[in-house]
Amino acid sequence: MDYSTSDQSWIQIETFGFDHGVPSTLTGALLIDLRDAPLQDPADEPALADRDGTDQDVVGHVMESPRTFTLRSRTANQAQVLLDHNTKSNLIVRVLVGDAEGRTRAVVVGEALAGILTARGIHTSVEHRGLTPPDTQK
Image (cartoon, rainbow, N blue to C red):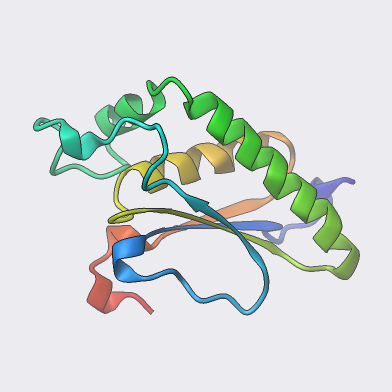
């Protein structure tokens, strides 16, 4: 399937914090729960504790985790399989990536996942709900 022929986002990635609730969805979504994933948590490092997943030091810290590559690859493959199935009905795939607060690991993994899918020619959009205060989220 050639996803590059459309300007629309075929896969919408949304990062969030479970502490603030799981985003509602009208259709099926692929849910990735990173709360107990074997990824290094920037909150455990005093120098990184106040930073978010857009900070390059935080990105490096999370990406150095031994199983990050496997997690990203498997998730990208799952999203693409779901997309292959959904495009028959012209449905967009939503991938919800969450950690406790939605500020660090979810953001890093969401952006990395978008990079992999984009490299495969799949139009992808990313929204980070955990980077805005919970009271301003829709």
